[in-house]
Length: 110
Image (tube, helix red, strand yellow):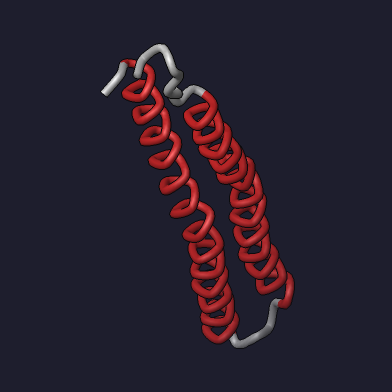
């Protein structure tokens, strides 16, 4: 294998690894946000049940905290989105460069 092809194969491998990690993060972070929201809401309702439902301010504070955790996970997952798009673009660009640099047979080599 020529040096250029080996270099191209390494670049493709690196970009594919970055893409896999980004997809895992992009898929996992909203799930974490939803999980923390559910746990926070259950804790808030549990606190309200233990207090007898007398203080709605405490419940409102805990619900706002759970919504903030969901919003945080959504923002972080949107920040990961460019980390998915960039590797896709770079993989395609590297493939095109490989096609352009393929050695061609000319009549002098025959």
